[in-house]
Image 1 (cartoon, rainbow, N blue to C red):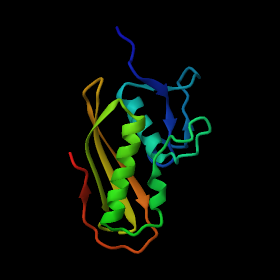
Image 2: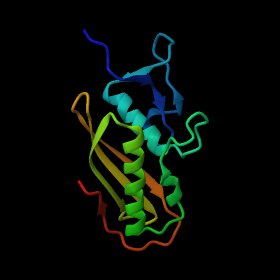
Image 3: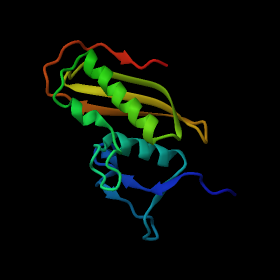
Amino acid sequence: MTAARYRAIALVHPDFDVSAGTAGLRLSPDGRLATVSADASVRQAVLLLLSTRPGERVNRPDYGCHLFRLVFAPGDDTTAGLAIHYVASALRRWERRIDVLSLDATCAADDPALLEVRLRYRVRATQNDDEVAVAVPLAGPSGSTTTRRSPE
């Protein structure tokens, strides 16, 4: 039997794992730190990358994604395009284990002050596809609610 190619400490992210209970590290039944492997560790790394602001990590000040810059932006096509650019740039630089299949950004139909960023990707090692959705709250006045797509 071969060991998992990717492995990481299991982390419950407060913004993405609401149903998992309290945020933080998980423990295994034997009292050790729980781990995730293979595709789950890649998914966790993508979510952490998208939720980290550059400058938050002391030893890697450039690590992260600039999505937080859009908080006071209007809900229009320009903001959606910037979200796509920020996510694509961060993934290209920091997460080389995946191939981006599609990347979309659109304002929610029921709440135009919420920008939804959807990423479909393939893990290179396993060739499994996964999808991640991140919601960015916008405080600016809303404009168009059309969908922007990245060039594929």
